[in-house]
Picture (cartoon, rainbow, N blue to C red):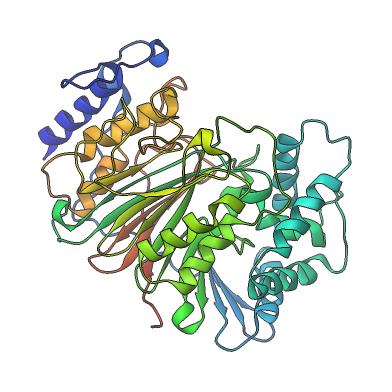
Length: 463
């Protein structure tokens, strides 16, 4: 196994630096100096090692019991009880419980919000009317239940304060923005790979989803990692998220429909368009609550895509299928929204050898859609690494899968493109063999070579 891993890692590095294996891809010169594999890769050992089940350090509850938060070493485990309360009541309960579990919540969330606002608005001059317009437009287009939940949260956590002021308190408007950062401001890099049952030792799907985002200049978000269990009968789902966020970054419902979003950008529009648009991150939540299959969810998202504020990819998997919804909200210069599967023809120069696996980075890949893979070092390096690691005949165990996903040394060379970078918020492993999630959560130390995987339980819990 060790020799196989070394060969696999060396091949991954070779693929990044050389054209190799008869592929048409020619890497750009910006890849830098060739370095020995031992300088860039590490052998981790997870085979036969169960993920860590963290103990509960403290439990807090809202006064009505609709929100319970268990504080653990790496994250907050949140349960929202929509079976016994309205969406507005549950939103209020969530805010109340956060203030009990994390009294300094405003001190980490407000600076993070203002950093993102400043990045999105180059000439702000303390005029936040543009931000408020985006919030109002997006919330007006939400499902009524989602809007009421968000309003309930904002009402409770703000204590009636409104507007935008950096005063270490969360106002109503700031609280609304917490859940709309992806749609109103913008996320950054992400990647994912999904192996269907023919490529795994268990015969069931394995997913790895990496979320990379702006963690804040002080890595503030590392202290607000959470798992939110939305209990709502047939509409229940589990979300790996940030404390206080009610939209979806990475989540899976009780049917095993998993969704995650990936920023793409566009070739034809730089200016932000909000009028008449809606939130794609809340549409992912709609899909998890209303659909049981990846294709049903994907068809809905494609139909809605022209109304989104940004061009995005969405990872959609279920026990039987893996899809990438390439969602285009701009004009036809960027192509057309579609569902990419393992048999979709790709753009020239974008090579993927195995239809039984799915790779997603921050670009469209389907033929005819804007190609941000081959011309973008960050995307093509990650794509090629995933291809060399996972396009093969090996049947992956979950332990072996985690070894490959953590094979890059961290913090050794900032010129090297890793799929697990210093901006990783979380890496989520979904194992369809037992319907469980496990995750690596980013901490204050950004250079952990051998990260600890934390057990998050079953996405079928409570069903």
